[in-house]
Image 1 (cartoon, rainbow, N blue to C red):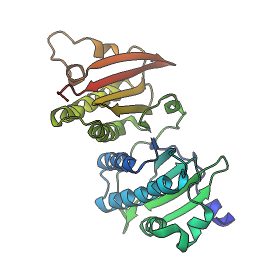
Image 2: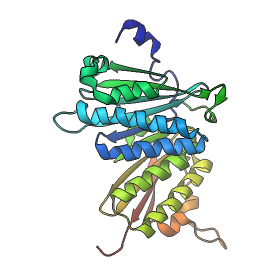
Image 3: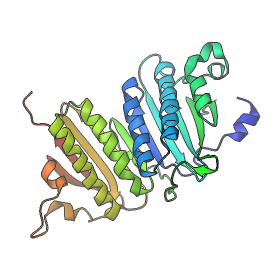
Image 4: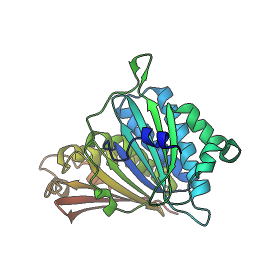
Length: 291
């Protein structure tokens, strides 16, 4: 990459990310990435054509990580979405070999993936990270013929790295909290499908994640929230937080005369875990159908 191109790329962290998604770099994780994009798009009333471009370009970038970054095994991929008044920016980051500068500039090496990314985005750049791995940056204009292509959400607050305390098949940080419902719901349902949930139990995931998002809207410790999901063996475990200390007590007991919430009725386990400055909510759902 030229020095001029490097100067034109935004410094990562200069703008607070709207969503950060950490996954293992496997082809099947594209479903989770595309689900995250769809969840954000729904809540931002995003133009369908812009969403299609985002899904296609980001899928190509993630595919390149899966194919090139870890030739001797698997590793992580991080997808960062940043929304500004003028554009949607996406960063796809790996910790492996990634896309070399030769592959980023040589049509004979790069294949069709990087060409698609450049064709669909307003601007795209690829660079080697000083700490190792590669970063692909894509910018998509937020306007067409002067018309906004999405509704700008409330400004994201800085990512304090709190989500690094979590682990799972997907680890996500979201700001503002109002975006949690779409992102949590879609990623949870995608992982429930991989865990082979039955259709009825799969439908329950909608209700449980909506209830968690409703709790977050009232009880989150700030305007950024994180969650981790682990799935397998017809079991789905969600850890969400941080919430204000003591705010989860309302989930542990039903108010007199009120019906039980979907979270209480449909979850197999609910636990509150103390954390620095607040608490985490842990929810487990199991599909008990006969094998």
